Image (tube, rainbow, N blue to C red):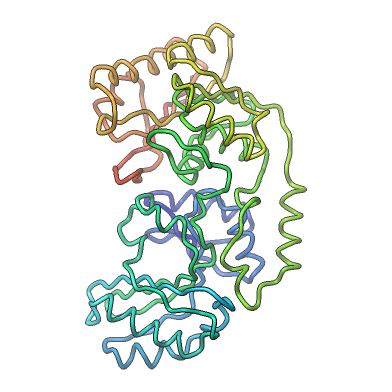
Length: 388
């Protein structure tokens, strides 16, 4: 199997798999691992940073269409086909004699059609959404309803996989309301895990928008499985084990805890805060988060006046390539830095694409990972602990 991720997040997903008792191997774009259906179900249910989980059907050499057709016919397609619905194939060809992705996809669809149930329709051939390295740019793929097979050919080596997830894994089911420049749930989870945030540390996002970071923080702290409220494509496969899946869900529900949390979300946009509260309610964590309509400076000042110790300011501020006046953005970054400098027990962690803006914090920062957000190259920067 293969848990695909946004670029730069592979090591974090590998750590998540280890926490599930699954040993994986990091590869560009994700983590490969072996297991049975129990591991497949748990990976989809629990992984917070993965984009989707693929099951590898087969790998073989093919430098001609004859080889491709002959070998593709031997794969176990019926095990991954729904009784009714559509099938799509996504193809990437690199440095191979078979370089025409549409022609490759047509041959693979023909192999599937030979063994597909009467109610299954061969739908489309399209480029692999992950091949761009910016998984966050393809929202149409996020709402996928077809059984997708991923075909990748590199140096004449063919690898074919079945997508077990369906809709991309960032779609937890709670975010019906969005705000300006939304952050994907998987990237927010990666930020939280890479920041080293602890449950007894106050977490504040003073630019929270629709609340993704605070909500993901509460779900992480309470051990709420991110896939608990959604369905997956593997549930349509002929050998889906409903009893095993029910057991996995029951284990996940029993693992939920209710530790004392101090998670704060602020935004000067009243509409964004209203959306955040609705999203948090759907996620089942609205009582764990304090949302307020406040400017960044007001949020940080209130927290400072409360005498809060061990604070992590974790946020996704504007980058400069997005909305915002340049001087206003410099002031915004400087305000975050000043608040942390004045309070030696505070830390800051932020996602940004602009080194000039991040320098306005005037803090020693270390990059935890580099990735992409909405087509923009970004770095996740974290300040050190007070005694470092």
